[in-house]
Length: 124
Image (cartoon, rainbow, N blue to C red; front, side):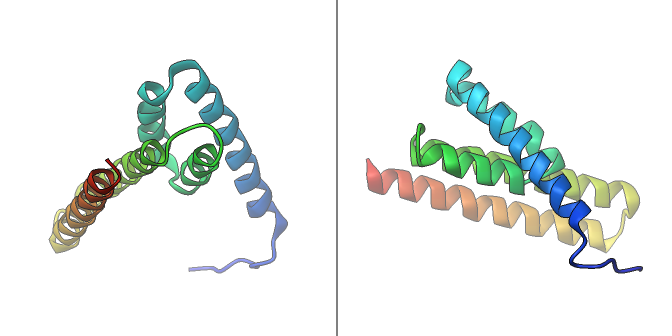
């Protein structure tokens, strides 16, 4: 595995462009469709990258959406990303790695969902 220069500007610029694009689209989706549009957007975006949708949704939470809505959207993005990775592992290697990854992914999603439910019950 070849390691690149950690100070290379190109990956940082690509991530900045991705983050700006996701932020703009997330703000538009939220203003046009509200949470009903933000959740599917988070699911689709989460298939590719979790960081950009997490940051943009957290920014929206500080301005225009409820924290519970932002947390749910981030959990949806994490779920779609985790499930996609488990599926990739299953297609590439049908052995113990895929099974372990699926178990850990489901446990993490369960813990995140439980935390979201508990926090919403506590704030209601």
